[in-house]
Image 1 (cartoon, one colour):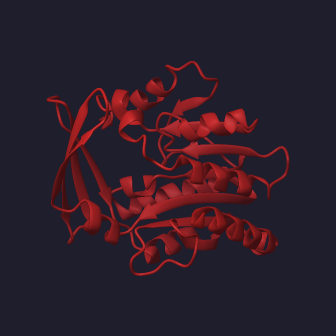
Image 2: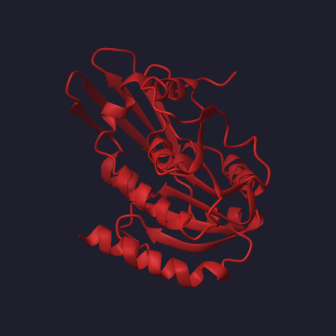
Image 3: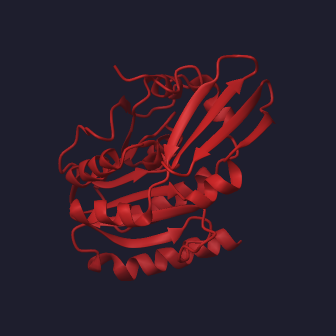
Length: 259
């Protein structure tokens, strides 16, 4: 039986993550959707409480969310906003050649601690896409962990409650563990693994997907040594039909990030 790492954290999650820039993901997803047929189908994997899915639903997308945590799905459904959220595993998706666009954001790939699981999830995403379908995901780098998490402890004021954080990082395994405690409650331990770009590129190739771009998430330019999060857009099949359209999208997102 899989343990729900967010079982007690889910009720606080949206308030703890109120600072997260969902606008960037939303605008990037809308731009990618503009490259697809008007009747395209979308799924946001590891959707959490459905924040992105709800916004895309309001934009009249045919969209649904999937997350491994039942608590996160339940919490996301408490506000009565119309969205479809289901419990499911990235490594065993209930779709086959059914989707035109998959998003999997907020370093969800990093939550897969074994490289074999990461490869399986990417293969499952490829199998879920129709030929020519797009896969938009991100991952954090070791630079992110070393700069913001490794061996650090801090407390945040979240309005009506506080959260304390304590993080460690094992460079040998690439795994970071972060214990999050709300007020004086039980600590929730979140584990992530740093996957190299090389291993992700290999997993995409083995799954029959080819990248349109690997981008620094903060600039949408080429990643560098100081990049802390990488956005990836890949295609199931040949990316050539999207190349020109995507260049325009990239320029537009770069302008938004600089404004």
